[in-house]
Structures are given as C-alpha cells and as structure tokens.
Image (cartoon, rainbow, N blue to C red; front, side, top):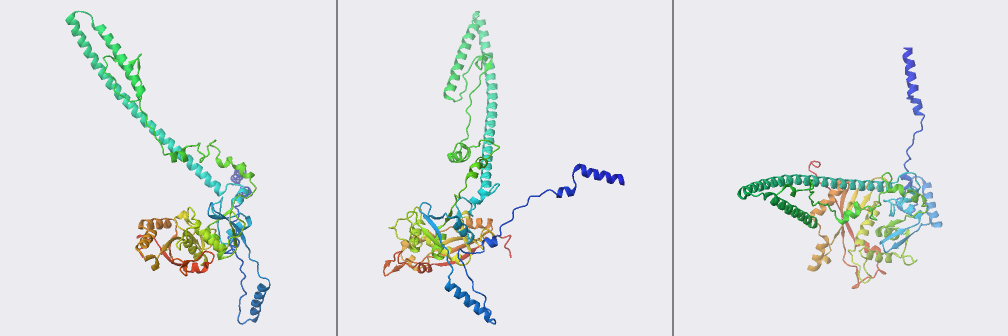
Length: 503
C-alpha cells in the first residue's frame, strides 16, 4: 500500500497535474457588461422633475409639493439645446459634437453613427485592443470573397479537364479512322500496281507511288496551314499513303477550339478582378487587409464620426421636444419649425422638389412623421426598418435591451370624399394604393422569419389645407392643426400556419 501511494505522488509531481498548481494560474476575466439600465434611464433627451408623492392623511406631503412648485418657479430648470446641421447632399441632419451624439443616443436612441452599424462607437473601437465588430465584418467579407474566387477557379479547372478529355477522345477516334482509310487505300494501290505490271511488263509502280506520296504530303501541309489560319477543324484530304498522317515519323497534333467561361462585367469587377478599386488586392495570404491598415488606424486620434439624424427624428427633436436647433448648410441662422417643415417636405423626394411645386397632404414626409410622432408619443422607440423591408421598427425599450417586436409598414388611405370627386383622381388614387397579395405575403414572410409582427399602419390623408379659398402658406400654417388632421389606424397581421395554429 505504501509503495502504491508513493508512486501516485511521484506521477502527480512528474506530470504536473496537481490541481493546486493548475488553479494558481491566472484566468482571463470577461469584461463586465455596461449597466444599460442606468445609461438609458432617460427615455427622451429632456429633464423631468417629478412632484413628490401626495399622501392625503399626511399634511407634510402638501408642504413638499408646494415647495417643489415654488422652487421650479423661482429657479426654473435649464432646458438643454443641441445643434444639428442640415445637409442638402444627403437630405439628413448631421450632429458633430461628441457630447451631443452621446446624449442623443443614450436618451432615446436617436440617429445612427456614420462609421458604425447603429450606435456611434467608432472612436471607442479605435481605442480598444483587439478586433472590433466592424473589423470582424470586413474579415468575413474578405473570407467570402476568397471562397468565391477559389470556387470559380475550381470550376474553371473542371471545365478545362473535361475539355481536355473530350479532345483526347476525339483524337483517338480520328487516328483510328485515318489508319483504317490509309490501310484501305494502300491495299487498293498495291492491287492496281500489280495489275499494271502484269499488263505492261514495265516497273512503273514505284515512280507512280513516289509521285502520289509527294502530292499527298503537299496536300497535307496545305490543309494544316488552312487550319492554323482559320482555326476551323476540317477533315483531312484523302491520302494514298500512311505518311499523310505522319511527318518525319511523328504524329501531327491537331488544333482544337477550346471553350471559355465568361462572367458578366459586374461579377468580374466585384468578385474576380483583384485590380479593381472596389476590391483590395491580396498581397499575402497570411495577412488580411485589416492587418495591413492597422498601423494607420492606430495613428488616428480625432473622432471622425458624426451622428446622422433622419428628417423625422430631427423634426421630432426640434418641433416636438424643442431641444434641437437646426442650421442650414449655407447659413448660420437657426431654422424655425415652419421653415423646417417646408424644407423637409421638399427633400423627402429624390431628387428634391423645387419651391414652385406646391406641397401635397400625402407627401412622404407628412405620412412618415405622423406615424413617427404617433408611436413616439406612445412610448415606443422608433427606428428605421429598411433592412427588413419595412418603414419602422418598434422597440419596447431600445436596441440595447432587446430586439424589435413590431415592424411597421405605412399605407396611405384616401377615405375622404375629396379624393373621389372625379374619375381622374379616383384612378390616380388607385394606382397609389395598389398592392398585390404577393407583396403582402413576401413582407409577412420576412417578418415571420425574423420573429417580428407585421403592423399595417393606415394613415387617413386629409384634403388640402385651404383657408378662404387659397392655400395657406408655410409661414402662417399651424403645424399642430395640420398634424391633427391625420388619423392613424393599426392592423396587426400574423402569418397563419396550419400545423401551428390549429387551436
């Protein structure tokens, strides 16, 4: 027993499998997740000062409420204001201040980073040691590009191999046929020569054979030159000697037309042309483009990212909350909400409309902003849904907490009798609102695959805003009265499957 215990201890020490020694090694800890509940504690970029709780049987609660009212009257809280710049080139609003970018994202998830997926984290990723999400995406794209190139190369090799096998098979068949023809012709010539010799009694067959052989060789060279000039395989001329298929004791190699596989110019430019500026050339298989540009990325110190706000988000922050001052790109004056409305209504089209074209009540900006303001006022976090073929995505708290639950598609509805007063207007309205069942099935199928519920948001378009027989100008128009004329109806669409919805 003693000997076995000593052996076991020796084995532990010799192999180094002592649990105490292994546990003493430092283990790398995963970074702690940020406290999103504290970071995104404010639902909107405004300061809220709630009143104290009212307790009816406690008179001190009334005193606390009175003091809070008096404090806000004597020293009202300062409302923060942020700056944004309208860009006519991109038809969006740019926010360049780092503090404003962080506040607008943390308080309501407004905008998206110009150099990031959604949250503006480009500068933070530059400071981190390791691979960022954007670099992972670039690396995956590079790997997919290399796989496509390798697959195209293998397909080309298979095609060339098949063509080579077919050409060898055709050569063998042609050689067999030519040998049979030559043997038959030789036997015929020998028979004719023997007959002539017996008839004339003179040895003239050898001279005749020499002439025929020379003529056949000359004809073969002419046929070969014609093939090299035209590239069209034609059957060889009929020869009377076996030397027609052999020159200097070596078989003549026939020229074969090879097939080529050609891709479209778009695929060649994007996938297989390594000299294209779209694709960076692969200099070394062991290093990627990300590793080559790493020293340049480390040298960058200033924040080159800005926040892009959509027209609806900017107008909600400016008109709805009053916390954003929007400047035009060619002036330093702050645009009032009425000027913003006319500017955004023109730039919701592509290309933007001119000032001479009157704005209609069914402008895309009016419909989208009415829906955006509606869901924001109900407490939803509204984000763009273009990647899921919808207009908006609705989050319960925000993209940092969970995925979107609903996908919204805006559908204009012309239920007012004004839109049916003439056959021309009726026909134009039918063309605007015409949707096929295939479209609805496709959109619903996409949302079912990404586990989102499709919501058809019908917006009742009012008739044009007319006062005294003339269209009211954008200066005198009441934005609140204009928005109140739009009515919204929600229809939740679910994809019905027989095997899951039997109950």
